[in-house]
Image (tube, rainbow, N blue to C red; front, side, top):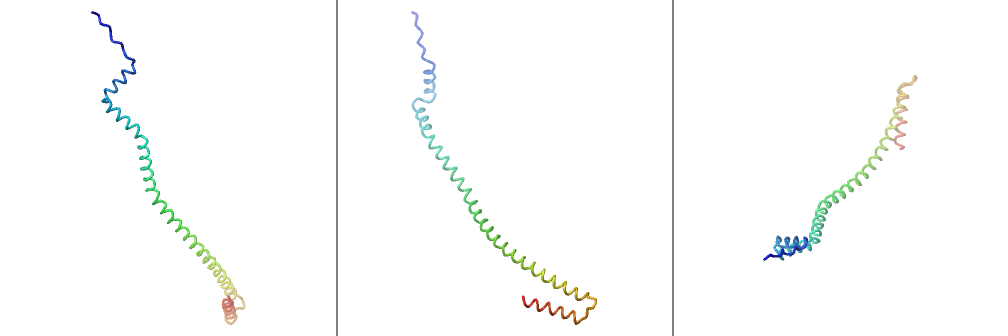
Length: 131
């Protein structure tokens, strides 16, 4: 008796049956289905984790920026006061320089006397009191 060879199944059926056998039948398919269906949840969990980590890093930076902005505002205010003081000091230096020039001129004058020098000094003192 000659037996006829068994009809061959299409290749994809053989691959599918082999895969089912390897994966343990329905248990393996259930595991694959679970992984595929949970894939979106895994992405959402990963996004939540990344968001929390980013916020943890950003919050101290935001606090430091706020602190630095306060310091910058304080420094600008102090700088304005210091500029005003410098302007006042420059004015005083100019006045004193002119006074010194007048005194020097009085001392080096060819007809300088102690009385004339005292007069120039007392006039300078009166001018300073008037200010």
